[in-house]
Image (cartoon, rainbow, N blue to C red; front, side, top):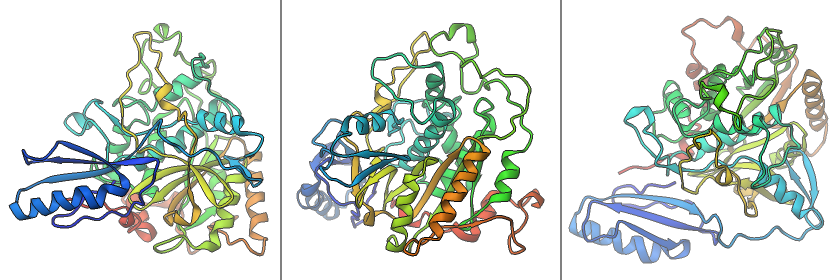
Length: 453
């Protein structure tokens, strides 16, 4: 999303054939309320006339430019290449496995801009169009963690087929309503504690920090979420977190309707109301915010970034291009494969029987692709380790990568915390998360700044 400044226009998004620019203008009766043009015609035919006339007549105008992908437009088919295709730890052939590739991509939960939901905070915005793309990407990477947790990596979605109860419980936790665990309402309001006002753009690190806090209310999933700071992953800290005592309580009422008896189609899964036994290892969601360069990605990190998509623990990457966040789920050759949240759809309401119309939550066209060199250097990489053995395997894989001559590690993997790091378990109550972030990521969102009039 880009909002032009007074007297000037900035457009950093490359025009692409699979989308269109939507320019919404208000405040002048002679102007159309909405102008939709092809990307290549936008600067020359629309903004030149509109802003020239606006400046001459000195009419106060509020203009917002967003990039909407066409859900069923002219999407480029998958390339015919002998290079392997990697999707969240699974390897495919672009020549023989296209159906399997599309099935895998379609099965990921796809969260996009929505409109006409209840006002955030009671009086706030009713749409996240133009500002919520990173929040939606955060939802997507976390939804993938919940799918791995409750359904498994090999689960597949089929349009029109009734799914397991766990699937609908996961989906319900992301609906655009104030009482869903990971709704746009909860993320936007929790972000206020991270210094982000409602309607302000998030960076990858802020999205990770907010999602970590929201998991406190999700007793059903019982996740351990670790956000690694300062480009460092400390193995001992993670094991202490995942082995801490945590009863497996029933699913909290905040995400689901209280009347369980009425939720036959969308009811609690069989394991949601387990006993008070503690989990020996809480499933781990590891989010690692990184900056892989200054204004553009350092090519020395590209091989290591690709290796992350090859790991069976991969949850993908949230990041994107300046002013445009994406959820990256894999790569082929030197192109990243991603899900794009820049499509505005109506908010979805459950039916009377609490079932959910879910077609709009799955991307049913070939996935988008972009050159890995166009990736903005500010990203967050995600991994899911369901067991301690799974985490040990991840550590082993990362150490093997560090031994490769032409691979530069994106972060440091340490067994124990050294003296130069403060003990996170001994922080005083006034040492807040936001203060810790300022040490390294205090300027992480600047490349994604939204300009306003």
